[in-house]
Image 1 (cartoon, rainbow, N blue to C red):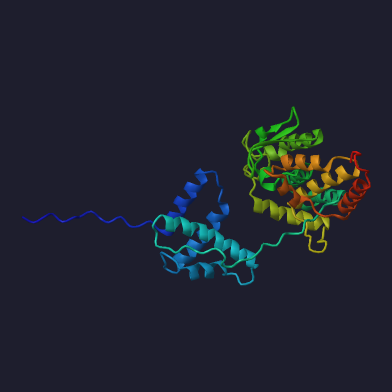
Image 2 (image 1 turned 90 degrees about the vertical axis):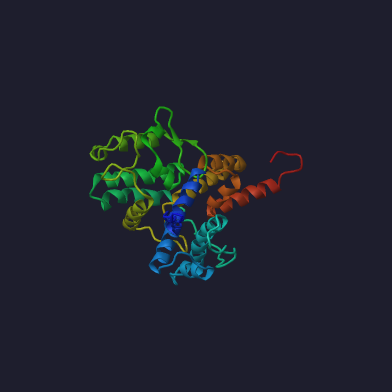
Length: 324
């Protein structure tokens, strides 16, 4: 008697893109955002698919990372590092791909020189919003967002993720939930709170039919902004304001955060404050888990360095046993 043939079809192995989806789900369940991984490794999968490949070699990963010959080597290194982590995950799950060794395409990412805004610079930015945009909602959005970043030192991502319910207008506080750190409270000056509430009540904003407890800053569809859109809008405002690079320092949205930190530390030196205490407060305010990270935001402006040197000379002249 013949044995019946096994008609069960063999399940095809998951594709690299399906593996990428699994990887993203697993890592995001642990709290990682992985937007860069999803975008760049997704592009890598698309590149492989266009070549009809279901796997890859180390040389091919390096070739993909360097597709743009004009990019900075740090960009090549970043792209390869994202693929390296994914390849390590695949290899650990018995997928036939190589482990990409560390050290390939090494490049130290250059630090952008911060552009420290003066009060005149900020005034010009705010005034430019009304001239650049005919749409009242867009003008108010950019004016309020720039003012909020300058007044609080928030990350732009935190500002865009801010929801109406995160504003405690009775106590002049913001509850920051989206960021690189744990949830934190950020105090507001009453004028900043008033500006936020005025923007939320703006008829042009209400006309977009936003969710009552949705994002504070909304598009024409009542939804939240993405980072790249705000960057493009800011570029138009910056051009209208006539802000030009100062040496290697180019005016960016993120530099409002640098300006906030540097201005407060300068004030501490100028008015006899305790710089160490101010640094600790800034670390908490900015959402840094370690005060050493806050040093990144303290740019060596001429004024700050002169004040710090004066304080150093004063302390050096203090007699032993005297308070410094």
